[in-house]
Image (cartoon, rainbow, N blue to C red; front, side, top):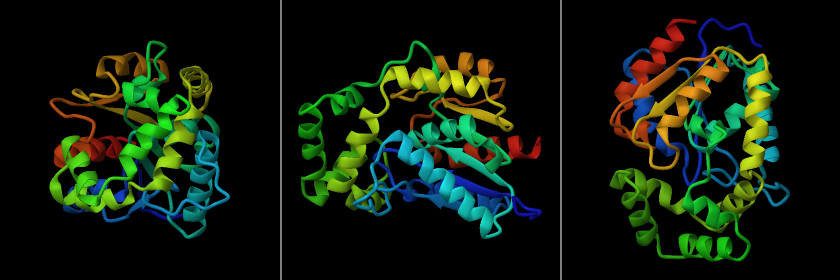
Length: 259
């Protein structure tokens, strides 16, 4: 990796999101003197979905490797990567396959890797043929105002919802279906086993105690299996980087300071 003194923080988001999600956390980082921050937008999620890109879990793993190699070539220096939602899934895959590309990692929704985990209701609908297409059509086809309302109903602030909503389009819908259908629960357990057996970099699990999509009580066992600390955010839900950016920044900066 490039020989640069200051690490670069790399943030990777998930579904149905764009890099706008990280704005409050980036602001909190800057207040703490952390200015080397980059966001990576997976194809279809705030970035163009090329016609020749097959949006499977394998393809996104290859995409993330390529992006980190590009950052290294550009002189980004040591990388501290943070993954949220499916971005966390991409980070877990990275640590199982290419841990050499980062200095450290942090990811949420660790319950994804627990043997008792079952996909949430919306994910199971996306994974079903025909049903998934109908659900996605109802998600991406309404007027922009309705897509904004969808995001505010999920708990995002009005201004952030308005920034993300235009990206909820047919390309994102196609990416959602392919991604979830490439990741049945059996594949998650294969990933969990590979990650546990890997020589991954220093890492941590960030747990939002009130996450509605992945039960927080599954995270401690995963953290213990991986031999990493758990950074717990009490009273916070799935979008912890929006609802408590200062608390999250404090936890992350403390972790990085310990490396």
